[in-house]
Image (cartoon, rainbow, N blue to C red):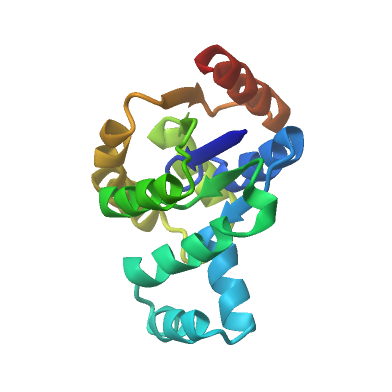
Amino acid sequence: MTRLVLVGPPGAGKGTQAVALSQRLSIPHISTGDLFRAHVAEQTPLGEEAKRYLDSGELVPDSVTNEMVRERLAESDTKAGFLLDGFPRNTKQADVLGEILAEADGRLDAVIQLDVPEDVLVERLLGRGRTDDTEEVIRRRQQVYQSETAPLLDYYRDILVKVDGVGEVDEVSSRIVNALDAHA
């Protein structure tokens, strides 16, 4: 059983690595962004609530996000494990995740931190060519990530696996798998 969380700053390649690892480890990739989109599209009560925040450009509250994750982790395809991407985003969400897993007599196996220097992140994000991706906005997002996520890295220090996130997709995926094997 493999229960993982993938963390890293915007531009670190979390989404790309999550898809590759999900296939490689045969576990579902669970992204909060995908959960939001699915709930909104299906017009579930949680989706309606999330949509109100998303439409006004605000963050979806932890209570809504936590409940979406709780429901998703209760689905049968997560029994053999899962890879969470974008959750938990803070220590309060990490507490809730711990409670969800404890209710199922489980726990996280590892938290993978994709480590990428800020200048490389800025270069990658500027290279996407999105109009809202100015260097100033990108650097601000990096600061927000650091302030929100630094406490999370400390929270998970006993199961944190830091991996160099610079390189080709397959190369980084192999580093992650090797680091997980060494961690196990």
